[in-house]
Length: 209
Image 1 (spheres, rainbow, N blue to C red):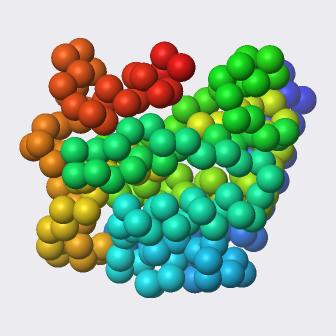
Image 2: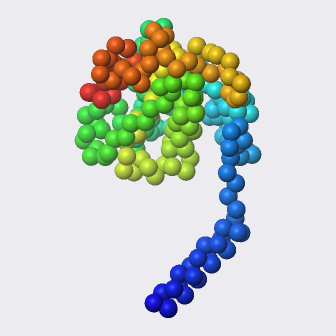
Image 3: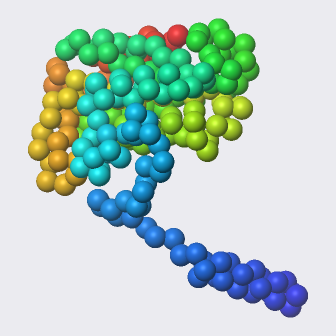
């Protein structure tokens, strides 16, 4: 028991020494690490990264970012989940190595398929931006190894119409979308009745297909 106790104390001391040598800063509210966008070229930076975190991406910005990634990596295919009531396209990216373009190819690979979705409520745009950063890191950055065992399907901007119905926000970003879609329906409450084009598209193009 005595040896075990001494070993535990030694381990605790080592952990504390490491923590003292390399303190971790916690970022709250509108604060963010300096140089957070790293050395990525402008075309591969998100709207927040390019605007000092005072703007969030429009639906067109999301389309342009996905297009930039598609032209920069051979491990990405894109399909449309649905066309919104206001005729906006909802792009979905499939990240895989080797590239996957059909459900049959995904099944044949034997890999686990993961689906990630953001921006159900566009007044909370953090997931939309984080998913675009994650896509970039998986395709071109430090997370490429994830594609060794996974196929990752990403829809960063599910509520495309709500995203672009801008409202003033006292914090940042200064302009954000609404919580509902263009029919004033909450997409997060439509899993059973499936009244919306958005959720119908999710069932048809992702879950069932």
